[in-house]
Length: 260
Image 1 (cartoon, one colour):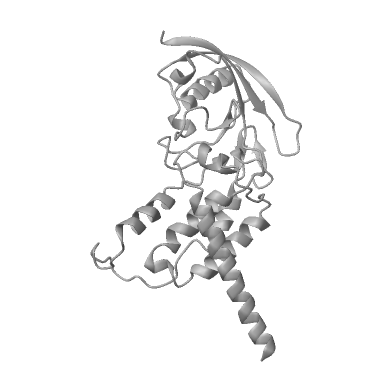
Image 2 (cartoon, rainbow, N blue to C red; image 1 turned 180 degrees about the vertical axis):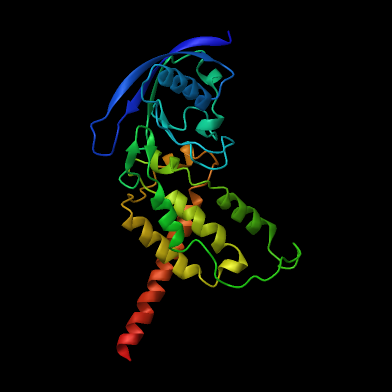
């Protein structure tokens, strides 16, 4: 069976202030289609009928950019683990369920723009708060010029795999961005080039995360389960340790300054 019939229940909302609702669409899906290709077919049909197409984010469609986030049958990016929505194929549904519910990521830190599109610029502001190094690195060096233990470099690469899709936020009961923030803090904090600003980075990025309205982490672990890149919750523990240490150091400095 290469084609099968499904019913899509898609969240439609014209603007952040408009009232939204689920609308139903009958689709003959090909099992070889990606999930986004299936939505393309739906939109082509809507456009031919003079109706408003479904708005959804996408870009590379190669599981790299993180733009394609949506909740499918209650799961961020859908039922297949370690997979972005653009890499999810309709063969995952050929044996059911044949009713598919699609809605946007829902979180205070991700205000809705339209239909399945949310504003994830809060992630950008978290990175701007400290996701960089300011030292002059100069010309490219040989790979072995700066000795880094393999275990450390491997861990840094694991953290750097985060694509900022926001699935961790959508899956978390508290809508926490701790996994995203921890990954961005950790991959720089593990490498020698990132040590100079390590305390300020943790303090500034965690503060920015809180200011964006994301919830706190209470160790549910749903973020790791939903992450298409398998980012470990262990990084949250590293972030918390760096944040507490940086905050205590800042407090000690402030106390000494007051004493002077």
